[in-house]
Image (tube, rainbow, N blue to C red; front, side):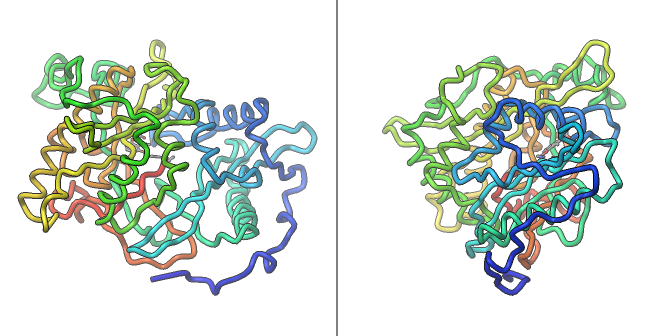
Length: 403
Ligand SMILES: Cc1c(C(=O)c2nccn2C)oc2cccc(OCCCNCc3cccnc3)c12
């Protein structure tokens, strides 16, 4: 396992951008300029990924981009756009942010590539490969040689594959928009009752994460993630950014809040668990009544439930972790409902297969493939068996969560 290409130096990398198709030009997008951020928002809102039936499209909000594109260490040059020379219209985009990965214990200084988008009218002009080569050049110029990215499509050799899982919250609305339906032998009222959730959370000591919790929650995550083979390593500043958001001022139940993070503080003031989820709505295309689907995505979490066991894979340790995580993420679904989300999404990564069934996360028909650029690694199990069902025995060895 290890880098594929021979180690190169930044000075070996061309200083100039790749040639661009005639009527277009490269344009580094200044995401701190509201007008240019608006260009990115509009391009993705109208041209980014849709589900396979083209019923929904991702609706990344402006606040989401501020959070996702400006973590500590972000670089202006890594928000790469393509504009029409004559009009300045933004017609393509790709971004990179720095990330410290560890693959089976080896540090791999990387970037995370995200938001690759080409305008619908410019598809099949081979623009995507040019965008990927250009952002690779810009990243190499800053002495980074590896990248992590995900895609629904299967490309050569994913390092891991996880399955989509969905926990309906507002079942009636999901049926209205065609995301769920009444299974044979059931009625709609029975489905609404099956997914009903209490108004209040159950875990004592549960509260929103605050700046003062960062050190303890980060230490807990590092210890909890020890057993995973693909993990993201956070500095304190990065942890604060990803879990507290860019400004804590956003009021808690403010609809514009992107990241929701909670800790469990025990009677001695110790942080024993934390979890987080982010809000990323879908635009509902072509529906008379519903224009948007509120969606929560399970993000990072950690628990000390199995720390006391010498063998964290023993049946007792697994049972203790399963019980604790089912209670924790059960509360997360209740909080997602309070945040007006219609469905709560999770993958089969982390230890999620311990609670997906108990919490009524149904398996989705989507899969998320993880790719590591310029790094050869043996596959990491993604929490699914060969028949694509949840692997509750082995669980997964994927600790990293991509937006
Ligand atoms: C996307 C997504 C969906 C849906 O498509 C969906 N949910 C409700 C209705 N629909 C159609 O369901 C998921 C469950 C777990 C993780 C997920 O995504 C994990 C993070 C994905 N971000 C990376 C990405 C972006 C674009 C395309 N693929 C992957 C998803």
